[in-house]
Image (cartoon, rainbow, N blue to C red; front, side, top):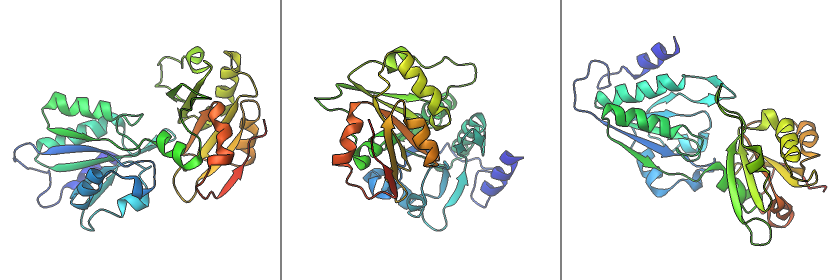
Length: 275
């Protein structure tokens, strides 16, 4: 039913329905972490002339405001496992539109290839012979790092950085907790707020000290940004007390201590490290 409604919304004069035009093209565009000023020049140029846009829930209103008023906007995003359109149907829709001759901007929060399922969509387009292009964006971890004052690497604190997801595909492999718990690195976990207590327990169980600095950053780079910082031991209760909500990133490592000094961005609220 949802896919039928989306197809009906697209089937306008000059649209894909019944079209026999040569294959079009799909641009998989990174919308960045939220602040529209962090869009790349290329992404902003594509948005300014877009006519058909498939976008995620996490693409902010400020970014969507850059679209022409007559652009057709279709939300196909996912939030907390609630899908406007299942990923497989999104892939099929992109292929169908491309083969019908449409010029499609597929707008994805952050970067298309960093936990954005852009790789799956690009593979579907490639298999169908639909021309496509990837426009990278500043990923949420990079935006969070800059705006929250938590460097991803620092010579005194972290010589490497790891991005991980807080939930896996059903039936997929569990996170490599031993690798995530290595010393002298920064770990940024996407989509992990719902399992924050378990994440903190697993990191301690696999070798990190309970007083390792850790933070949750909500709505990074936007006016609603909040940083709740503590330790692996205290963070779950702090986040619960502060009623932190998605979208949020978890960041673990000694670099979190620098937030007090480097957190230049005005925040709606903040809980400072206590360990």
